[in-house]
Length: 212
Image (cartoon, rainbow, N blue to C red; front, side, top):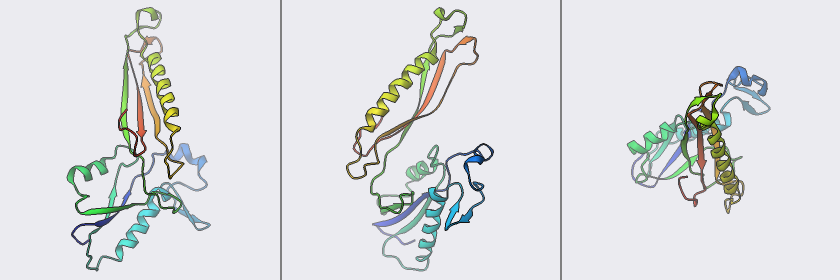
């Protein structure tokens, strides 16, 4: 709505962290998709992160539908924020949310209603480790990629602990975070794996060097 420069955008994502309803059922007091209202709260997957803030942004935006605004206002909703960031990448590539038009953004992530004016960055990669395959009865003839991967994971864990020492000057709960979320390798118990991998996500503080 509106045009010009110096605009305001309310930004949110429609997806949630992946879950398995049957497997996780015992962790919920109510069904994750039921949206039960109890004690003044809505219980369900993504109600805080971030269906509630999106609903608030929609109702706030409705106030301006018939207004003539001096600066642009936009409600920007993306998908795959929790994994892949395809929605944000589309906005970037198509320049849908241009800094020439929008100067401010409110992202409704849950912060207990405390204004937070900084955000961790994000980087993702898959680390592949290659060895030399062979039969498990003759390990001296091969190079076990899973064993090497364990050393890589150990080094990443040490890096993770080192990064946790430095916290944000204003928001003490924020620090550069690293997470190893998935791993794999090998095809059979009796074969020396010639390849292994681990998926890594890296979330740096604003003043930390980008990359790995």
